[in-house]
Amino acid sequence: MDYSWLRRPAGEVPEAARTLLGWEVSAGGVRIRLTEVEAYAGTGEDPASHAHRGPTPRTKVMFGPAGHAYTYFVFGVHWCLNVVCGDDGEAAAVLLRAGEVIDGLDVARERRGAVADRDLARGPARLVVALGITSSANGTSMIDGSGPLLLTPPTRPVDPALIVAGPRVGVAAAHDVPWRFWISADPTVSPYRRHVPRRRVARQSGGVA
Image (cartoon, rainbow, N blue to C red; front, side, top):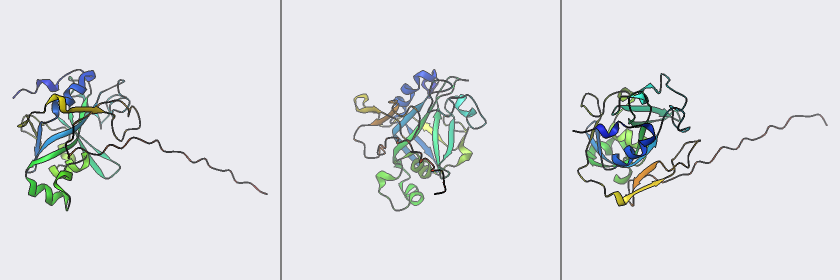
């Protein structure tokens, strides 16, 4: 199986993201067809990327090899899953934002509780819960079968005319960069919420009347 398209310069990570639409990711008895993804480049190129300032113990996975999983904890509550996509030593990754559960529906329903089928993996945290993966997936291969996750080609290829691009979600920097990609009109795509900066409330100094 050819995964060479995952290995490309960080500036071309949007093309890897587009290609991932329709691909399928499996883990824990559940298989999901990807309907929404989001691209992130690397050091010095993308201020929204975790790797913008270079490798750290947390982000070293983003620097390769391509096809490995990069997981991270957000808001102290949720895990998110990315596919590493850059050349070796050059950070880039694609966040798996949403998908359609196409196998293992009963398992996904048990993990996600009483939600509509379209919502089982409709969002990056929900997708991770539906797959049943944890932080132990971080740094494991998603392409050679040695890890808990497996990325496989589409059984239903996506018509390129149906791929839509728009701004990214939930990032404070470069949120208007149109590196989020999704399948038009697919009900499993997550709703878009534009980033709204938090307003700082100025402290009033106390005084004596």
